[in-house]
Length: 177
Image (tube, rainbow, N blue to C red; front, side, top):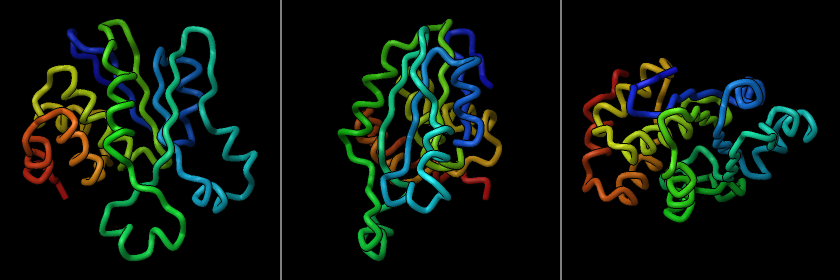
């Protein structure tokens, strides 16, 4: 968890503990969910649905649906399986949702594993709220040690936030792998 005194608090998780964190801690939750095909890979639809954070009083909830793929994946096999890329419109909608986050807010960003899509989205949101791309990545890797931000979502964030390649460059320079 991060709490920069001028920022909201941030947590990043996978689907396995997202519902609990959302219900007991968050004031705002972003659920980045797999598309229909990806959900069919799980044991049952009801199992998947039980893990997704639900609306409640005092919680602003935003759900979006795109898969953890990049255009390179899309060209090869992803479209054969019905997987969906994030779009500029998806990213703009996420940033519209987080634009008014305040110091006392608590934001949970989750995806299936809490490693790729959620960490890329969280990085962009931190940039939206004034952190440099390098500082945003540092914070995300502090919050989520196993972060591996989706490079395509980072590129979309860079474009929507008009960072002129700074976010993409910071990720390339920061890669601890």
